[in-house]
Image (cartoon, rainbow, N blue to C red; front, side):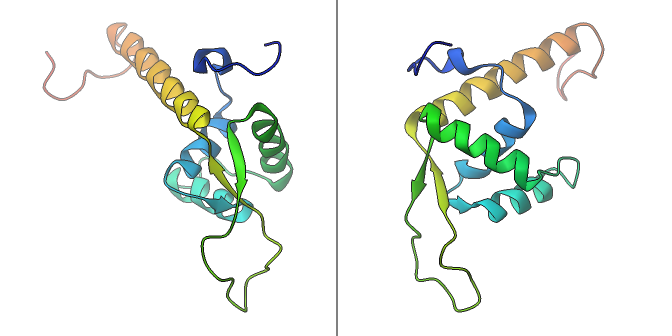
Length: 124
């Protein structure tokens, strides 16, 4: 890809780590450690992002305009580091995450057609 583009398909396919970062930010702004915890919990520990992987991906996502740094929406509690950076999806990032989800849905459909996965409930 040569420079930023507004077509979400130009960013696909996403790596699993990047897709899970976008999923974590889809329900609101989070700081880096919050993203790590969210991904670990949502995947039941199947995907564990290291800080190096996370911050390398965040730097790239910022550069691509898919996410942006956000102000903390609340006062920082005494036990939390006020230097934490919060991130949120930009509209293009949301469209890219949606396009990736649709792409994966098509892949799952192909796997079902070839009987690699069981049919969805209600299908014959």
